[in-house]
Length: 115
Image (cartoon, rainbow, N blue to C red):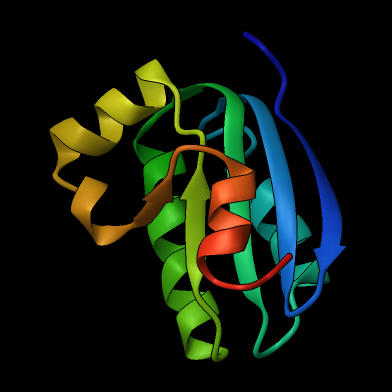
């Protein structure tokens, strides 16, 4: 199992969190706490998932919870660089259309003016 890593970068009007490794039931709460610690009301949140190699149902549920929480706080969640295995989970589950997904973090930042 590959450990989950994450790091943040503040953007004008938003927050970029880069996620790598495997997101599953053993670590999803840590990422959730990290997001809630750093995300401010009214900010958009971009999750760069380019380094995420695996996601299970708990990880998917976390993404859905984060989307709801960010919207409730007046922001928007955007996913960037969703790779093969995580993309497959999002598609098979039917969750893909529920998210604002971009090919990379740079595109996500430019698409909504958070650069």
